Image 1 (cartoon, rainbow, N blue to C red):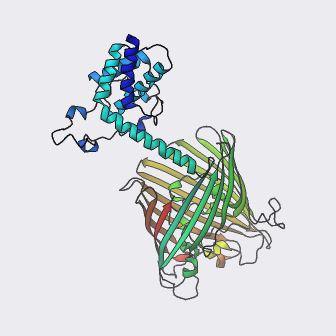
Image 2 (cartoon, helix red, strand yellow; image 1 turned 90 degrees about the horizontal axis):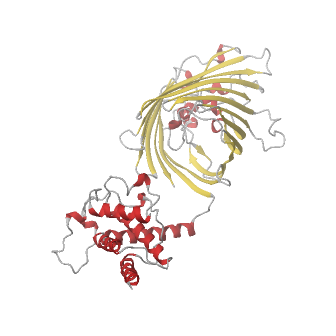
Image 3 (cartoon, one colour; image 1 turned 60 degrees about the vertical axis):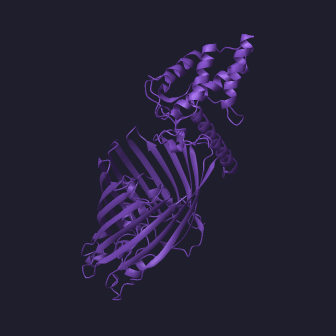
Length: 530
């Protein structure tokens, strides 16, 4: 008779709290609970028939400390019945105060556990004193338990809906849209034509859709579609030094822009294979990644990365090997037009290969040394016209050896200094005496992450676009002066999905010729991600 009466009382307690929509999981994660309650009673819906005098006592809104009766009672129940497990840092056994919702989560888990024990047992294992304790706790925290039940039900409903509507269990679809309002200012074009610079404002866009798939959890297949209509300012200014870092005009024709598959051979070895849109820079790490993104980094082509990484794009293969915790060796090979029968991969006379050793002895410092060898693909798209063709259009077989070093140091979390230098030694193999030309580039960068707002970035770049220092073909094929690239931009996030980046860069002595007037390039880049 006593056992029956205790079971009835316990059932009455449970019937108030439990409902079919709730499961019996006793490891409810704390992050799903409202931990930022500001003790404002307006968040609790009072029954409409209580009147103005039914004011919730302050004691019912305050946190539950370890000294409170309720806290000690629940801890005692946990010790006897083992009804709460999996909470971080032994939440309900420590001395840290809990919000009323955190406490209610533990109480709910304990009630579920005890209820299931008695449902699955022929005898009642709950004492009369514990039953009374449960009744009192349930009454004192009735509002929180009810709110918690409703929120968990809504969460489970949303999760079920997401699972039924998800694109794929192994694939993710991501998108990026760039809108750019851009313009250029100057007097005359830098190509010696004497024509004025086209200084009209332009408004263009670039759209990318990326499908990422993993088959094993340790690999990634990336297929990227792209359509764009952003003019290259080389056409308006007479120099490729003025090009934006996200330009390109395909009349918004959508095509596969990148196709790559990466997988781990061992935990320290990664292999990359790509047939479309693979550049040398995609196969090696970068020491200054805050500037390298076309949608969220530098606004100029020159500012994004060391120009020697821009020698060639096509089908490629790369291997990244960790040599310990702080050293990485990356190798890459890119063949241009490898899908054509008369070119292929290994027999192709237009290719580029790269090797880079990256050293990161500490989280605040990184250093890399790079070597690249290219055949008929050393044009970086960032220097003077002579650097694109230093041998007067007479050479059809040009080999180049490139050397570079890059460094970055985080002075503090909001102040990062970086620098890079690159040297390209080009040789015309099919000209008499096989003349050489040496091309130099360098840059200093300053990054200010979280400048003014979290996830923002202020960036400053000062550098020299690729310049021919000397040329054995003759002094007429050397850059006689020095151009400087001066850039500043500020990426300001409106929210997690939208960022606005106003920026400007200045080219002094364009084409490394002080007879040319300074060129100014400005843009407002709006990047939407989804």
